[in-house]
Length: 85
Image (cartoon, rainbow, N blue to C red):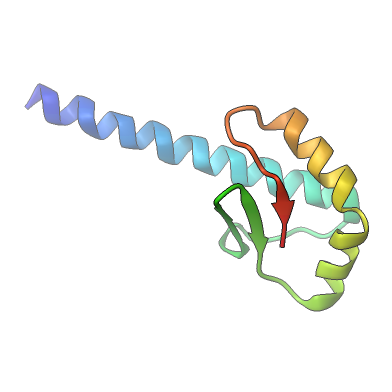
């Protein structure tokens, strides 16, 4: 039973880390363009940050993409993000 408990604790830490990363992404984007996203609109896959939102917000993010990525790289050290789409 102890082995199962320690195994499940690993998943808790992973989920907690993912939530913290998404919260950091939301905060960074809000600081950069003034728009607050929902956590369900954000997905990270193959080092690419996918954001599901309307085209106006995506365009604003594209214009400030370099500064957003630089800020994210400095704040998130355990996950690499190379692009935003």
